[in-house]
Length: 151
Image (cartoon, rainbow, N blue to C red; front, top):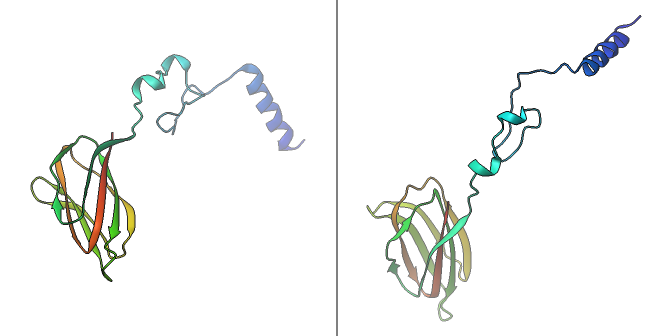
């Protein structure tokens, strides 16, 4: 008699007898459920998980250099959606934006020499604080910046 029939018999006996492993390791991600875990030990996933999303903070626009008013950020990440339109009478345009803390340190910059243009800039690991956007531009008809925070 070979080893395969013995394995089949052992597996069948384990299934029939209802033997289960009482210790388990899980690698579930937040929001997933471990079907092998004891139901009594599980918490309601909706009670502890809070879904994060992008929240609108502010919108700024202009046609020349500008330092925006400061705005409060409480989230952990920032998304900046920017758009720039060129001056039709010029061969060259320049748009430079910087996301800065109130202490004057700029955390992220973005730049475009091609106008019209638009983009999205992300800033990770932002501390809750007050920030502002500093825009410098040449030969630009208009620009706009929308700020969103992840919380």
